[in-house]
Amino acid sequence: MTFLSLAFGFVLLFFGGELVVRGAVALARRFEVSPLVIGLTIVGFGTSLPELLVSLNAALSGAPGIAVGNVIGSNLANMMLILGVAALICPIAVNPNAVRRDGLVMAGVTAIFIVVALGGSAERYEGALMLAALAGYIGLSLWHDARVNGGSAQLHREEAESVTGLPKQLWLMAVCIIGGFAAVGYGADLLVDGATALARAAGVPDEVIGLTLVAVGTSLPELATAIVAAYRGHADVCIGNVIGSNIFNLFGILGVTALAVPVPFADKIVDFDLWVLAGATLLLLPLLFTGWRLARLEAALLLALYGAYVTCQFWGMSGTYPGAGA
Image (cartoon, rainbow, N blue to C red; front, side, top):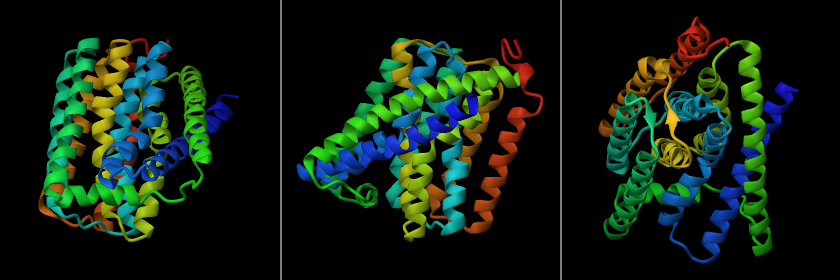
């Protein structure tokens, strides 16, 4: 039953997230909302919706390890697994002018997230500050891109245009949005219950399951978007999706979760996983700032590094978390 709950939860998260994004994008286009706004807000929020509801559900259910692990693990999956898969399909050459600003924001948000985590927990006031900073970033980006219309603005428009299969009728848009939210919500319940049960049965901490299985599962919308974009020869859109998702994950998801209930960070997260997150972010920066081409060889290296990281999570790590194996 545990694996059935996990599998069904993953399916609901994936298809529910897709429905919300398609319904919301179709509705925005119907009311002639700018593609820039759609790409920067609706697409970014929609692809991070599974992570948000899973982390919030986990924290409120007394499993903060899954909540924290999901945030960190999703960002690592974005940078190593998703970019690795996309670049294997179609090597990525990035225009640094299109991603430099958002890449710097991602690096800054990651640094602030690490500082918060080193304090041992994310408190409610820190969650509120994160959400305020995220809102400010989105507002300033919209204002700047509407005035300048540079590379980053074009990339956000391409993200909006990459969403296809949109419903045409207004009632169908509403069904997609409402049904999608319901599916993601129920899928989050199933996934958290299944992940918690699996962790207990396997004798590993919640954090390990959150960093690996749950993180990959909630990143399925981003993975699907990356694969489709790569097959269409628009692999550069994957970079914009990854940057936006990482920013939403660290400040949006942790911000909402911490605002609802303070979120503690396990010692092992602080001692190990935070620095893997920092290392992966630093590894990505040359691609963002120099226009370095992510070829298939580098993609294979990213996937190998991600495989090594996941292996480390299950290789003698269970005893390093408080309450592990209890």
